[in-house]
Length: 293
Ligand SMILES: Nc1nc2c(ncn2[C@@H]2O[C@H](COP(=O)(O)OP(=O)(O)OP(=O)(O)O)[C@@H](O)[C@H]2O)c(=O)[nH]1
Image 1 (cartoon, helix red, strand yellow):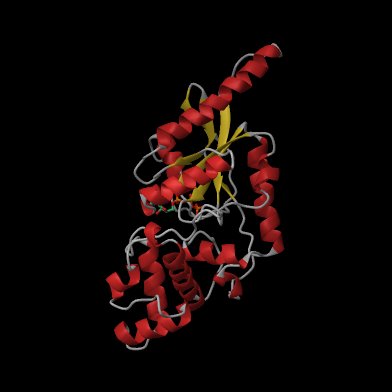
Image 2 (image 1 turned 45 degrees about the vertical axis):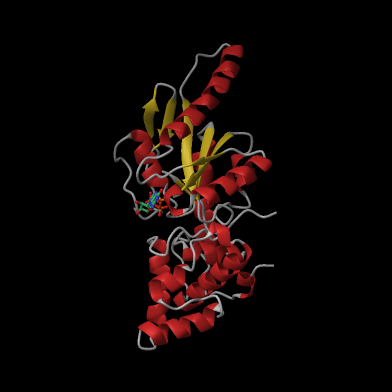
């Protein structure tokens, strides 16, 4: 059992109506496509998986995109690659900000079209372009991925989700067309260990939370990983940046010590700085999850 499961975060639940509405919108999008491009955050590939995903995708083809490749080390990428392989899944690693790995995504989606058109031909139907949608948790890089696939900006990156508008198809190639709006997976906050990781990575959408609890959980996760997998982390990431090491402290105690050392005792400022520095990559490439055994 992970340390973070002991945290009771003050995460505000989405209203049930809100979740139902988001799920309905997602279903509307999924209904229209042959292929689902599912985007996850490379720092937390498991917390950015939704327990209902298999049901939603059903028998459609699925391309598993692990985005923010630049935020994990090559070693961490490699252990995830092996783990997904052991689960009989193929992960496609991307950096949607700079365009790495994008061509392989388009190719994988198009490959699904070959099967599709074989079936159509058998039924005497004309071939058509394969239809796809990009889905994922808030802020994982869905819009950036769509824009990269298109090679131009059609979707406002970082636009707030929830605005209803007409679904439109955009053509990526002769063989592939894409819904221009990404599908947002509604947060499920029952799993607090996953929720805290989503909050640390800013992948949780419109929920509010206690910065100090989130920052303390971050330090606890980091300490745990430093003990179990030191070779997968940068050496002493907090000591290097703040001149105070975390390893001898609990997350909560570390915030106090850091606040005293650098922020005149302002614990909230220490917490916000920690989270922001992590999100900006200023602490180095730190994964918050490594594959389970
Ligand atoms: N470092 C890094 N940043 C990325 C990457 N992909 C996207 N981003 C950035 O992450 C932020 C969120 O990206 P978006 O494309 O808006 O994410 P989204 O999933 O569409 O977000 P919502 O609209 O909130 O659901 C933006 O500032 C992007 O520039 C990546 O691979 N690496």
